[in-house]
Each structure stands twice: as structure tokens, then as C-alpha cells.
Length: 567
Image (cartoon, rainbow, N blue to C red; front, side, top):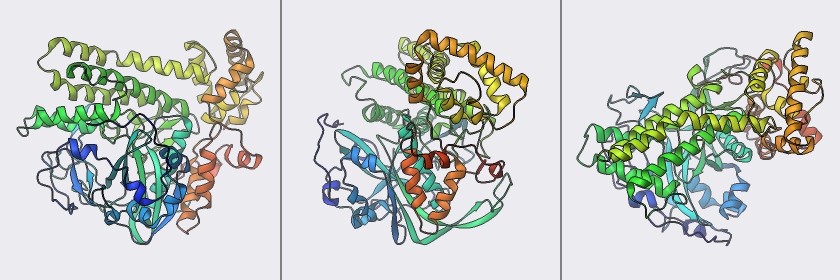
């Protein structure tokens, strides 16, 4: 596969015709299409897909699309003019009407299949055919792959209509979930956490779909009403959307000898993963076995660093199955996610997630996903016992590498050069007993206060004198350790670069998507700006509005403190 040029093309893309000239379809050119697919992409009914890496499929346009937002920072990174987001042809394409495509673009998009495993256990029950051949991109359709400023990007519509993997659903995304995903990707990037990126957000002025959700002031655990929701399409972008579950699917087929090309297709998808996500780090002249070994080591490094960063910023993915685990090592799937406000190691915002996907359990979930990745690439080395042992050692070392990453993050959050286990254990106990706001606590701590008065700004409960004394003792020990490593000013500056001031707070996101249903996008734009600079001190008005504890009325509030997957 031809790699992107490393020399940047600094010419600003200002027209749709210039945009489409960047098209370069490595996936469709280097991998196998489903042999049972239709040539024209009219492939929207649920059916089993037995082989091939992708299904050519056309998205389904939304009616009368209206512009809501685009990522100005990402447009700038791609070299796109901001005005392009409002170009009629651009809007047409990224609201699902691929008839806007012109050469060298293709007039079909593509959807991919993947397998499902949860904590290392393979599942096929969610497949309507009971075989696993119907599980994949049910409403996510990639429509463009191209090179911008030397970097390859894939652009995927979320809510682009049904595909063969839709399992009978409508393939749509509602405005609520689309706003959340658009803003969350922007926020995570601004936090410095690897993530898929937001490109555009368009809403239909005519189309709605019914979804279960929560009534006003509901305290129900599960959704208690059915609501009509505006249909929207957000475009997410990444170097690729290859997932652990995708590699796993081809490994299962190879293991089961599902067809004569199964092992070849596994090798092809792994080769493509290396080319798409690791070409800057893995020498293509290496023997394939050595490339696979480097892939396993690098993915382990990326995955452990990613999850440690999730803990650093208070993010809980909520449903970290193998199909939601990007093989490129970045955050993917903003459906059941949430950010921890009141500190709780077992924080889990998604009603369907359970404790196994809770906040502090994410490293364990990551290890389970890495285990499935390791098992999936093992067949490629089946005839080389020495290589298998090297690969197995990479797997065995996962916990140690994960622990090192977590220790590094906790030390950085605390302004220390080395992790201190005793300080950390006592801190977690105190944070839990005081019900601290996770983001506010560490931001206030970043000022390195001499007493606990400033820290109490982040407490949700009144603390006893005995607990206050424990806090004073801990604070004194911690400050002594910080001073041994750095001067206070340097330590404070470093801490403020890893402990954000502004957090994702669901009770501040809800009004934004509610107002958007009435055609008012003011709050979405405001949140883009605030969340786009999470480490900065912002205006007094912004601080008063966004840097505060969750009001009591949002405790145990359906759709705010907890929610079903907001599709």
C-alpha cells in the first residue's frame, strides 16, 4: 500500500472539488469486498456476511439537512476552509447523500464486520443469525478515505442508515447522541487523550425516530418513555476504524476454517492494520513475523497509555468490549460513556454496563481486549515456536506495563516524580469518604494548598473534625514529598497541565441537546469553546457556570447521572 507523503501540503482546501481530489481508498483497494455484495451498494437489509473485509454500501440521506457545528480546530489541522462545512455539496455528502461524490471519489461507502467478546468470552448471541456473521457496523458507514497534509484519514458517518449488519434496526442516530459524540471527541482531543475526531454535525429538519428515554425529572433506572427524536448525522474521523473485534472475527474464521481464504484474510487485515496505524513505527522491510511482534508490543503500549489517560481525566468508557476497542489504540465509541464527577472507583454511567466496565476496572477490561488481540494474531505465527514464545511474553507482561502506566499517571496528577503507594492508598480512601468532585479536587490540589480549606470546595459532603484531621495529615505528607521533588511553582504548573479545570458534566450537556431540538445551537457552540480549552483559566462567567459541583436535583437523575445507550 502506498503510504502518505511525509511532506505537508499546505494549500488550503476551499472548494468541494478540491476536497474530493484528496480521496485515496487504501482499504477498498487492498482488502477483499464481500463477494455476495451488490455492486451498487444497495445493501441495506440485515443478512449474514460470510467472508470479505468490507461490504460496499450507500448511506441513506437525512431529509433537509441543517448545519449545527463543525470542528474548527480539526478543519485547520486537515487544511480545510471553515466555509467548506456550509458548502451545499459538502453538506449533501456528510448528511448521507453520496450522489454528491465525483471522481476520484467512489459512489459507495463501506461497512465492516467484527466479532464480539466481553472480558475474553466470545459471544454470538447478539447476532440475529446465531453465527456471528451478522455483527458489525449497523449504522456507521465510512464514505471517504484520503490524505491531508501527509496524514491518511477515514471519514465515517454515524447514523448513516442501515447496512447488512443493522440487525433489523433503522441505522439512525438521534440528535442527542450525535451532539454528545461530537462534543466528547472534541473534548477528549483537547485533553490530550487519543481519540477519534469530530468533523461535522448535521440534523434533519424533517426526519424523526422513536427511542426509549427518560421523562423530565425521572429517577427511573431504565428509560420510562418513548420519545420522537430528530435524526442527525455526525462524522467521526480516524486514521482507520479497525478494531480488535475485527481482527478477532477473521481469526475465528481462520480457526474454524470457515472458508478456504480465511487465514489469508486474517493476514491481510493485520498487514493493513500495520500499514494504516503503525507504518511510522514498524519497518515495512522487516520479516512479517517481526512486524507482528512489533505490532503486539506497540498496541500494548498504546492501549495501556490510553486507559491510564482515561483514569487521569475521569473518563469511563462504559462498554469496553473488543468491538469498541480501536486497534490503533485510541478512544472509540461515544455511546455509553461518562465522566466521573463524585469520585467513585465503581462509577459506571451506563445502565447496561455493570461493575466490570466501571471506572477503576477499565485496566482489567483493557487486558481482556488485549488478550483477544493476542489470541487473534497467534495463528499467523503458528509454525514458529520461538516467535510464539516471544508473543506470549508480550501478553504475560501486560499487567506490569499497565501498572507502570497507571503509576506514572497518578504520580503526575500528584506532582510527584515517582509514584508513592502509601500516599495514593490513603488519598483514595479520603476522596471516597469526602465524596470529592474528581476534576475539581485535583485542580484545587494543583495549587498546592497549605490547608484543606481550598480542597473543601470540591467536597460534596460535610466532613467531620476527625476526617479533617486525616486530610491535614495527608496534605502535610504530600506537600513534603512534592517539595522534595520540585519547587512549588514548578510542581503546580506541571499539575495544571495534567489536571484539567473544566470537565464534561452531563447536566450541562443535556440543555445543549435539548435546546438543539428547538433549533437553538448556542449552547453547543459555547460548550465547544469551553471544552476545547479544558486546562485554561477562562472568564469569571465561565468559571461560575462550569466549574462547580453537581446540583442536588441531578443526583440519581435518569438521563443525567445514569442513562441507557443514548442512540
